[in-house]
Image: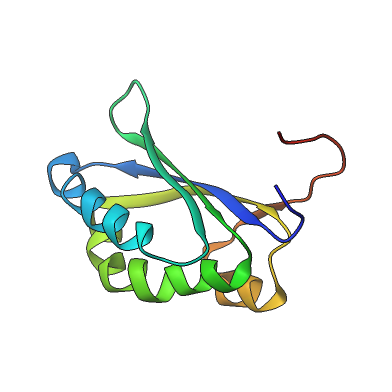
Length: 117
């Protein structure tokens, strides 16, 4: 992964899975069309309530685009059935990205060693 990439794990707890599940294909379809969107995966825990969403973008610009254009229109419906419990952001997000997401209180992690193949 290049140093400009921004990626994260967005963890939610879902109490109404029957209302949450229909949102997933809409989000996946919209995100798949976005330039700069590299990865977008939903993973569910054994409890069938904890969902990790792994997202990776080429840099902060497409990440912000995703938040406003693809996720934005569905965000009210999403957060009506899913509670954000943890958001860990990796890479080098821009100051603009950080400012746009300050209310979500994400945790920022910066790589200090390692590699990706």
